[in-house]
Amino acid sequence: MSPPLATVATEFIDRPGLSEATIRSYEFTLMPLLQQYGQWPTELIDREVLETHLNSLTGLRYSTHHRHQAILQALMNFAVERHYIRANPISRLPRRKPNPQRGEHNSDQAIRYLTPEQLHVLYQAVAKDRRTEALVRLLHRSGARISELLALDLSDVDFKDCRFQVLGKGNKQRWCFFSADAHDSLQKYLKYHRHAQSPALFTAQHRLTQQ
Image (cartoon, rainbow, N blue to C red; front, side, top):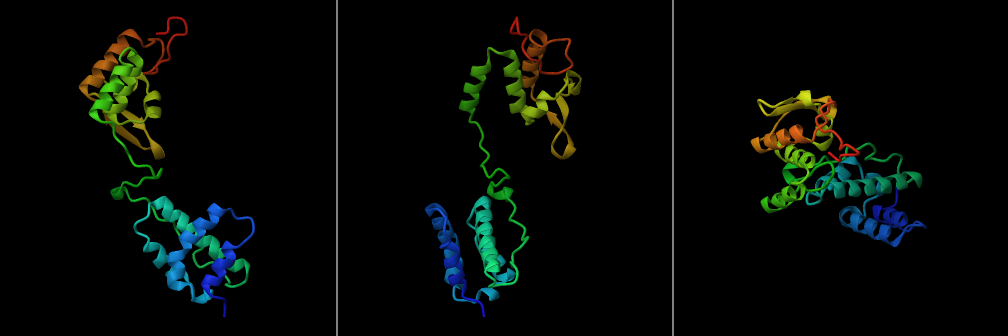
């Protein structure tokens, strides 16, 4: 019979070379599992036990959940190396995906929106630069990514219906629509600051005239 999970976890944490911060992280992560299953022989800690434990961690951000799973997987890999168990029971276990309903996204950063006051300050800051103002207003009003806007040609923009089509992630095409104020900013930029000889919608400033 294999040693208790608590014994294996102690050996795992007591390995030489671990920093104090890593040790604290391991102890904090493993403690809930050990409180419930610490006296169990390690060979009885199967995939179902570990999945049930991970699924019970409902209050964690998904990136923190990933860290808990990674530490559990490292612990079980250690048990395999010590010949306490034959195989890691959670090898290749899929990680929890972010839940958009909880405000989770792949970057694990909450999406934040500018307040009307912040937008007013932003537009004041770019008001003297027609190109930047048009670009910022189009970003705000269309929801397109900066890389998508900079890849546009003038011919890609339907000014009559205030829309343009972009090729986004996964090579998927989608329509983006913009507002009347973005249309006006674009028209002023096109009339006074865009280089007519270039096919691109947004052209760089001229190195001499700075226009």
